[in-house]
Amino acid sequence: MQHIISIAGLSKTYAGGFAALKGVDLDIRRGEIFALLGPNGAGKTTLISIVCGLVNPTAGRVTVGGHDIIRDYRAARAMIGLVPQELTTDAFESVWNTVSFSRGLFGKPANPAYIEEVLKALSLWSKKDARLVSLSGGMKRRVLIAKALSHEPQILFLDEPTAGVDVELRHDMWQLVRRLRDAGVTVILTTHYIEEAEEMADRVGVVSKGELILVEDKDTLMRKFGGKRLTLQLAAPLAEIPPALARYGLVLGKGGSELVYHYEGEGGGQDTAIAELLHDLGSAGIGFADLHTEQRSLEDIFVGLVSERGQNQRGGQG
Amino acid sequence: MNWQAVRAIYHFEMARTRRTLLQSVMAPVISTSLYFVVFGSAIGGYIPEVEGVSYGAFIVPGLIMLNLLTQSVSNATFAIFFPKFSRTIYEVLSAPISHFEIVASYVGAAATKAIMLSLIILATATLFVPLRIEHPLWMLFFLVLTALTFSLLGFILGIWADNFEKLQLVPLLVITPLTFLGGSFYSIDMLPPLWRTVSLFNPVVYLVSGFRWSFYGSADVAVGVSIGMALLFLAVFIVIVMWMFRTGYRLKP
Image 1 (cartoon, rainbow over the protein chains, first blue to last red):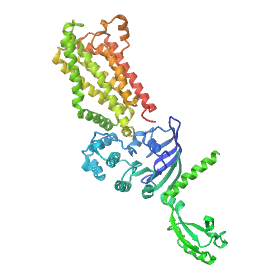
Image 2 (image 1 turned 45 degrees about the horizontal axis):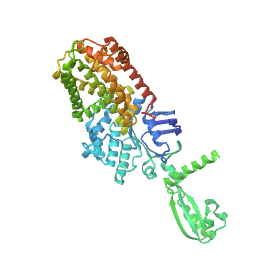
Image 3 (image 1 turned 135 degrees about the horizontal axis):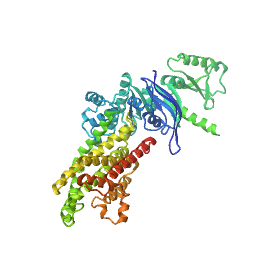
């Protein structure tokens, strides 16, 4: 089976009438790192909470490893480890006890050797007898990850894993996620840090106002929407683009004093495009004072998508 | 059945008791001993025998019941309220564990603690007054049934309460009055007819009466009625808990 999680027509309207999810369809592939991207309040946590059994869906169906999350909740939930967004821990328990408790809770027989391995991988071994209340925020975050991994899940949900986390822990976390993926664990993370999705994800889903507005391979996404932009500061303003240059799809900006050219980056088959353009500009007698190129980041794409969406909706209502 | 999970929760709860052993055992034992000293020895000497036993011995079953009720309720309330308050409950709710298993492990642990405490108080009582237990098996039956029933009530209150004030409210306003007016310190036959009838609406009367019967063989109401009522309360609370889980009441939005 290719899809480890299948979500179909999932909706959630909270008791107060707030529609957090509006008919979301999403398939997660086995073994991938999937990033759910979206602003605060977009519905990312609600989506995760439904899959993990913390929130009752209003409509729709979710299967995890082929098991329906409601009818066959035991089999579905046993596959999942969840690291919540908030640092919620039992203050007076020791690290060792709380992680061992999680393993038992998920129906696995005690395995001290495995718990030791997890704690060591998360640099928690020296703190194993420490009470949770005495740990720093970063350490608590590690404990929550250890708890989620304690029962050897096949799917790991990380809800805003690096919110309020220092650089070192963030890089540790990224490494850990890659190691887990290499071990065959499917990782789904939510984030509003674009950098994180860009760094780690195989695929990206963008959530906005309860709808999944885009799901794409990260590389495709970067190629499709990413690309590069060459901006030329012209020596003299142009009234219009000469017909000889029409095939480049150039755009005139700033009252004709700027020429913008969009092209694909590496491997796009247009590697020589700039050279050709500059040559043709020379032939057309257009001189330029300066030029620069820039790579569109996932952030630009994301902001573009979300705001475009907002405008469309406003237009539709009007 | 996910026995590993039930065991994990049960052990977790019992470990919490062990950490706070001194206050959870010492406080009730000392306060009950004070009752024995004051009512049993000091005042009891001036009170004639009740239903054929000395007043000091007469109040022992009621005092144990009083402790059992309050301990069962407070143990279970706290056990479920605290993870809800600190939000660590997410883990239990996302685990492959049924509602029945969740209730069984929390209520089981709360009831175990309350029963252990009651047995300690019973042992303490033998130091102050001469005791006899005519129906030891029935005594254990009432002990276990009451502990389970009221732990279940505590569990319900713990889910219902969404702040610390509410957590105090029901035990203070409902449970303590009911236990004091439930015939712990007197036989309801001593009451005027009107108040005797009112007392019959108090569920605790049946529990105390049945429990005292297992000690001394005499009861305010027929033993069968006591057993029936105890089972009825258990059934009512089970239905409420089932409803809470099915609707996700204050647990799952």
